[in-house]
Length: 200
Image (cartoon, rainbow, N blue to C red; front, side):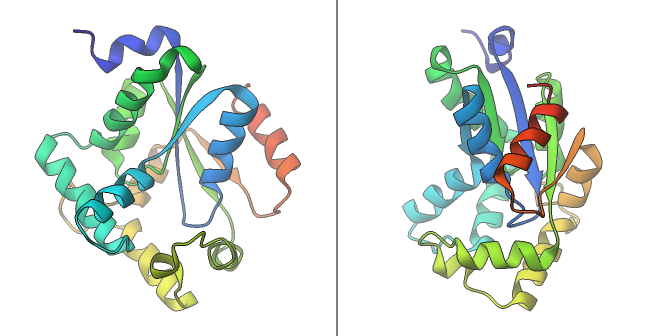
């Protein structure tokens, strides 16, 4: 049976990482809408799992589930492979796969192993906090936080706890191939930057 690596001759893979509220989903939707990529949010996969378990989809719970999946699989890039499995079921309909949000360096390594590109998206913290508060999209329990709580969550995700299965976004950032600054809020300017940076 062909594994996920065998699909690479027919697709491209882009892994998105970056700070909370930086616009990773916006980038993913642009690549889906304008260039025919399948966009999968691995954070959404984690939210779905939290709800199945009767847990609030709070960031702390999502961190715990992602670490559990990495330990169970013995593979730090397990979330990438879960997204690849979804892509593989529909691959004939898409040019490639774009997935967000990579939060463990093993996920960035897995994208690179598959011949893909890892993109870091960022913006000023106050801008990002404003976006999160304005676009909670029904995730009030997850996103209704003070700026100080928002910063504390980010600090918890940026640095590894000592367990390789936990989040370490600083290490992911160090592995990124491209950095996209998305502080202007101009969607057309963002489209132009992506087209240039990713040679689309």
